[in-house]
Image (tube, rainbow, N blue to C red; front, side):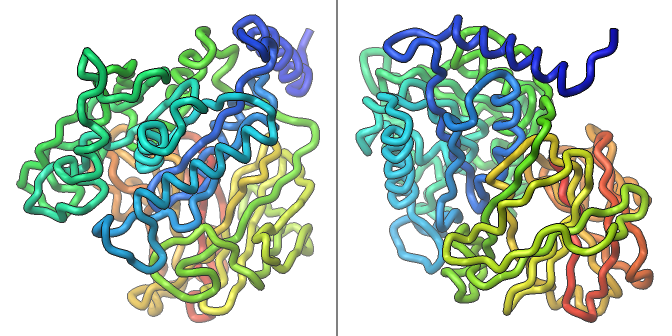
Length: 459
């Protein structure tokens, strides 16, 4: 007998729910703890989309999974000096503290699990050590957090949050307890790192613009004394948090047992929403990425052809963004491919092509882009982007418009998450991007009309 995907998903969910109930202990036995997910430098909550789908597919209630947006996600050049559109380590931590309190109030739980990527782990550690979080957090999981710095050298940006020899990380890494641990006691800690493929845990400074100069940081820089330190071979900086293998480690650490499935179980009804943002402070133009609402932007959604990216009729959704920043809610077809179009003053018309959405999500965040001056002479500019990971050669199979490898992807350490193609002709034709089996087809819109194209990968 052959089961439908929906039937199979239901069986997996039932098995996963039983597993969670068996693992739960304490006053809320049978109810999994709420999890708060914290993104990294310059990023958005949207990077946790597939991780949330995997938790949901293993029986975790959607209302107990919370991915937060830091309003100004990019760190300052010098943590002690104000910088427009950027946040200090203290501000990042204070925002996390506020979000945790909201989640505790909404769920009635006494503690949360914190899961972070990269800079988000700095906020988690600071909150638990110095912000009152020790009593409110049961487990802390840090994926790719540069716990000992991206570099450790007081002769280079000594006040930077990512300097392992600077005041912020020196304070966090001070020995604690009789064993001299680097983690705050009372919380269960886990780090997830790559063996040698994390661009921000490299002995050489090539990825921070100082090729040939030692960083004084080793491949094991994200590991912490006193934590369970997990090493996953070959993964990159983002995959330490957003990959299926990282999810497997997280689930086991929280529940004590492996997940039922590493896949994403499809839903019968898919509803999408999320925030539209840009660069700068609110609607004021700037260079740093922002997670504040881009009020007044318009979003249109079109179903597109799998073969050539052409629109299949009129827009299936349209909205002008209000003060909450949300462009939804939109009931989607889980089998359909979509083009999201963002229009806002001061930005290029941004066309984002996506693979089908197998499950609902309220963090399909969209960021309006600009056309770079150097690209304005092109007929069309198309970028293949992988928000939840990097491109690595020869590790990955990647192509853009038939070019393999695509432009700008070097051999060796996986260190770039985008590949940009400037077309000399052919605006209006189909352009395809592929990455390890995921294929997205879009259209080349004319740069002369101030339009840019993104082919955005899920995985």
